[in-house]
Image (cartoon, rainbow, N blue to C red):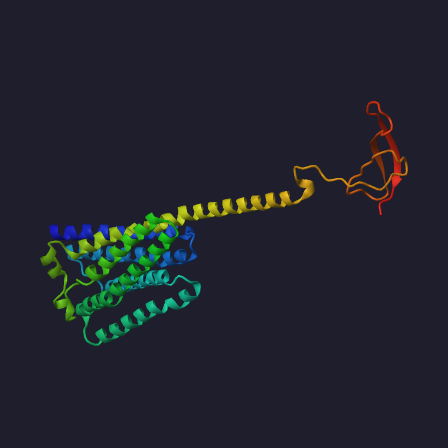
Amino acid sequence: MRGELNFILIFFFYGLAFFSMGLLVMLEGGRASDPGLRKALRPLAAFGLLHATHEWVEMYEIIAVSFGAELPQWLSAIRLTVLSFSFISLAAFGSFLIARSEASQKYILIIPVIMEAVWVFGLLNLGGMYMGRELWAAAGNWTRYSLAIPASLLASAGLIVQQRAFRRAGMVSFGRDSLYAAIAFAWYGLVGQFFVNTSPLPLSLIVNEDLFLALFGFPVQLFRAISAGAASVERGACREAGRSSAATTGRTSSDAMSRRARASGARSNSTPWASSSPRPLARPAASPVTASARSWRPVRSRPATTVTFGCRSMSSPGPVTSCSSRIAARTP
């Protein structure tokens, strides 16, 4: 009974780690500044939530068996379906990260489709060979061989690609988080999904959970739970969704305002009447009023208007005197 309690706790925290990751990505992933990353985080959220559901269903089965309850066949079918869709979502997440361009993302989903086709083909063959509990055990191991291991490696490769993108953008801490998550997903797939339950499949008769327990002294489910917790470091991508989006928007707005200010200053310096120097005046023709007066008029004068000139007497040696004359001038 104590061993069953340990497994119940392991499966509970195992599912909780993936549920927390899926919930966090679902809530924060939509705020990612990179459209490609935002699109890739959706299947990651689905993987976390679906895989957590699978682990908690398996925890329920352990509890039910410990109390002597008979498990229905449809519950095993639901658990297998949830497990397969969770790994297909993980494969889609890695595929989206590998394909950075919008055009390549339209065709990269052929990888999860091929994986699903191989999985279905294997299930059809297993259905003709085994029945009952043996069929469900073999189908579960086949799901981990054909979907879990390739999907985990795809996610690891995609996170390495994303890590390089973060470093090129100057976000070193986010790149480090993505690298840690890539390593965790690689261990989760290569080790955690390779040691499976004992089933009629030949490989599982040799490499199984009992061998892992004999080699390392703790169950493989605990290793999967630790790997799931380490993979949750992908929350760095969710922090990028919130912080980097706001920072990028702020930098873009600030740069745009600076460019507009510099352009406005350049236009001001190139416009004569907007500069700090006085506006140049043009000397007109001889005034019909008097030849001894020096008169000035603005460069841009209105046609058919009355202009008042201030003048200085050139003939009088005394102090400056003011005079005014009103003329009607028509500019050419």
